[in-house]
Length: 347
Ligand SMILES: [Zn+2]
Ligand SMILES: [Zn+2]
Ligand SMILES: [Zn+2]
Image 1 (cartoon, helix red, strand yellow):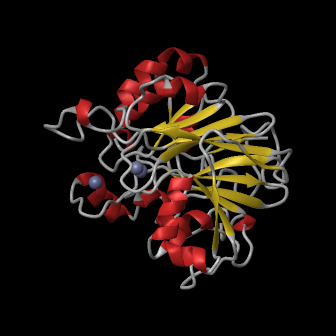
Image 2: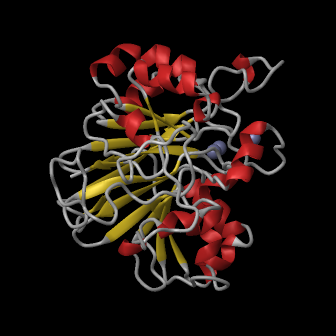
């Protein structure tokens, strides 16, 4: 096949997602011998419109999709400074996983909204380049917070690179203030390369011209907030709802119940599995809910709707990235591990 990207590697998407209604199969319906998910893969079905789990639709020009463009924690895989096998093997094999990132793509009009602007933004936008225009790679960007894996890709919108024109960037007023007041981000604002849309948590934003109408709502979540505050995003079409919560300190104050309510698919913080990644550290003091706790809390619901809850934002050390047995146990419990390239019909 001539239309391949360099470094194209096929993950274990097919195997791991089978049994999960609504989530598309892996890029070419293959499964890899090892279960480590790999770097940049093209959206499912690309380019020949075969999407076996998509209701027989021609994915290239129908409906709208959420596509996972990245599934790792901020530092990605391989991770700077890590000389352990998790990253050394990735270096040896040319595997790369970008930080957590979603695209909302209107497949008919060929346009997209990017959820997070990560340091891997070029590779991630490359997966949806069919929806981009010159100097306008996407219609808008939604940001969760001011940690490096979530917003620093904005730098590529500046005069050194794309020099976009008033790219709408939706974030909280506090996050907008951080971008307005600190270099180099303030230059993007002054030169009107980005247009900050201050979005109060809880207040929905509508995109009438996406599909049959798209609504996105930032939901405030607690997370260590050195520079700004943090939100999750609820993404709704008239028919489906997806929730994206890559970073949160704890599932307290009923926030988990609030987030998942009425959502068809939820991408949830999976930075750490159970603490084995941090030997000698007290897990109760680590500001992320371990996957094992999230699974315990959601077990009954996951059994009812396998694949509804999908783990994202995996740290490079998280065994759910590379330990076959753990991956299988997560899937068997009815949960999913987000794979780069997986997608879900939003309308
Ligand atoms: Zn993060
Ligand atoms: Zn590592
Ligand atoms: Zn964070």
